[in-house]
Image (cartoon, rainbow, N blue to C red; front, side, top):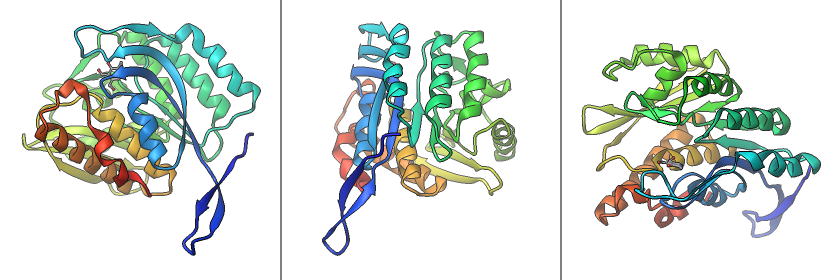
Length: 292
Ligand code: PXL
C-alpha cells in the first residue's frame, strides 16, 4: 500500500507527522451546477482528506438543465481503475453516488472488494429516485443490482423513495411513522449498513427530518427548517460532510447534524441571494466551517 505522511501543526506550535486519509469518489464530473465530484472533492479536502476522483460520466451541466453534454465513462472505468490496482492503492473511504448502468454497479462492487481495508468507511448514496418515483434511467434490473451494492455500505444515505425501493415497500403517500422508519432501517441494516440516515423527510411542511439509525443504538433525529424549494446537489453536500466527519472520528449522529446544519446554512445563502435552485448550493461561502 502507498503510505504518505504529512506535517500538521501541533498545539505547541511544532509539527507532527500524520497519516493523511484518502477517499475515492466514484461519481460523475459535472462542470456547472454544483453536484457530485465538483461538490464532494472540495468539501472533503477542506476536512483534510485527500480526494481521489473516479469518474462515472462527464457532463457540462447536470441533468436538471434543459441542455447538457453527457459522456458516459463506463467503457473506460476498468482501465482507469487498473492503475490503482497496479500500485496497490488502498482507500480509507469510498463514496458512491449516482450510477448510470448495471455495469457501473458491477465496477463499483469490484472496486470496493479490491480497495477497502478493515477500517475503510464505505458510504453509498443509493441515488435512485425521489417523491415516490424512480429516475427514468432506473430499470428494474438496476434496482436489483443496487440491493446488492448496499450490502457493502457502512453508511447508507437514502431518501424515503430509495429506502422503500430497496426494501420493496410501497411508498404510498410518503407518510411513515417513526416506528415504521425504525423497522425499515433495521431490516436494511441487517443486510450490511451499520449506519443509515433517511434524508430529507418532509415534516409538517416547514421542517425536514433526517432519521438516524445505527445498529444496536436508539434512533435519533436531526430536524432542520425547510428553506425555499429543493436544490440539486443537496444530497452530495450532505453525504460528503457526513463521510468526512465520520472518517475524522466523529460519531455518526454528530456527522449527520453537522451535514444538515451546513447544508441549511448554504441553502439560506442561496435563497437570500436568489441563486437559481438548479445552480446547487453555494458551499464555497462556508468552507471555513468545515476546517477542523
Ligand atoms: O446529485 C445530483 C446530481 C448528480 N449528478 C447528475 C445530476 C444530478 C442531479 O440532477 O443530474 C448528473
